[in-house]
Length: 110
Image (cartoon, rainbow, N blue to C red):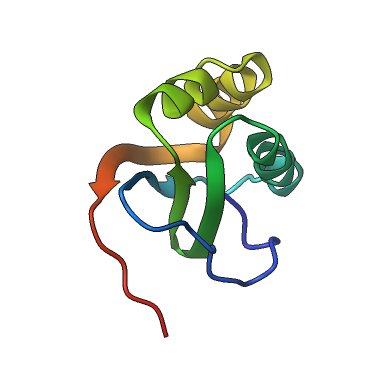
């Protein structure tokens, strides 16, 4: 969710697993955004079924989080602090966003 996170490629298990792809455009005032984004990564890492996250922002922001199953994604979506961050994002930080959920069938690494 933030360009403040260390740059790395998530180490995911052998597929299948799921990816939540969050794509966003931000508004000009991002006060508190980086701190909230970092907290969401920290909180997601504590959730059952979380596998990893990758994020980049250069105008268009893309964050991909990886999850063991759809139940884990659903639980994360309903986590109380995450719900508060979602509401702040809608009201304050994002001019547009979309969330996509995909099942990862294959991955290739180098």
